[in-house]
Image (cartoon, rainbow, N blue to C red; front, side, top):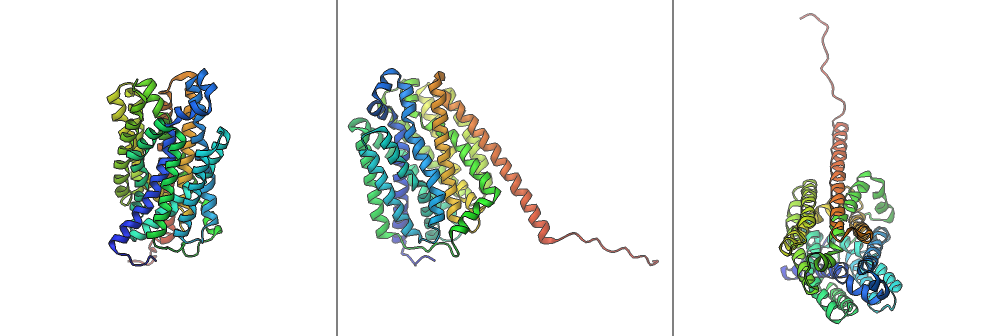
Amino acid sequence: MVEKLTAGRRYAALLALALGGFGLGLTEFAAMGLLPEVARDLLPEAYARSSAEAVATAGWIITVYALGVVAGAPTIAALTARVARRKLVLGLLAMFLIGTVASALAPTFGLILAGRFVAGLAHGAYFGAAGLLAAAILGRGNQGKGFAIVLGGLTAANVFGVPLITGLGQAAGWRIAYLAVAAVFALTLLAVLAVVPEVAAAPGGSPRAELAAFGKPQVWLVGLVAAVGFGGFFAVNTYIAPVTTHVTGLSESAVPWVLAVMGLGMTVGNVLGGIASDRDLRRSVLFGFVGMIFTIALFGLLAGNPIGLFVSVFLIGAASLFMGPALQSLLISVAPGAQLMGAAVNQSATNLANSLGAALGGLVIAAGWGYLSSAWLGVVLAVGGLLLALASNRLDARQRAVAESQATGPRRWPAISSSPS
């Protein structure tokens, strides 16, 4: 139960949780716009030989962060099943703060990777815990909207936060940019401490109950949907900066604007997806994947033209984030009794997608197939996500049919009388 809140306190609490999503958006996506700066600073010899190879290597700061999410989300969800939600959110924000400061101050590429991994550990658990907290504040029947609010912070970061941080990193250095991100986490921690009410952990929650989610085939299948399908989005998004400068031919100063337009599309998609997911989870996922396939293909065809670049990145952002609230709610629905684990698995899956998209995109670029080769790889991954989503729907329909059959019992036919009429 949530204590009775005034309207002002409720809005302030939701805003504080969304601010954490804003910080996560900064720390996750700012790296994509600053990869050339990171490569020049930390890998100068490799950059002198081949800027493309150096940028692809620098992409490991994205991959390692994503691997931290994959490892941390289910682990933290299981270990903190009985921890009150607000206390959990505060602890996760402290982890973000420590990991981001370490990333900004570490002297070598290897130590920066370690700092990024530590920061990534808290990412998935934060979205799960903060999303459930927001849903509890909003009340029953608003789970999709609760997650959309926290994701809304992330999409807002992509509209104006990431472009500003990218511009700051280009002007003052990527380390200053990361210190600015750390300041956002510090502010969020204070805001949550001040205005977010305490919400108890789920009744009967335990590490065993949370881990039991992994015994359900649908949890694995829906997680795979997110891991493979969202890899298409990250295969494009990771290499937006070099596509803008080397393929479209725009200056580095245009990169923040491209990121802002993608973020605007993500914001629109997230809002619409939050509404749609509270109506029909599975249909929202299918519509999102169809849109992602067509928009990434459009990017691959039109990114060489400035107008085509801006239009296609807006549409990619909208189609991709339309699925965000639906996938989060869907994983919770297929893991009854393990809400925190269901939410955490979604974040692990989408950040596995981040790692997969960044790594595979880097491989095809480093192989000499050009920066836009990552877009066509993205189409393949999105098609894979759609096929897996269809398989999940089919399994769900089969399970429902079995459950209905067991509930009604075997059909009994009327007895045939043998007496003469």
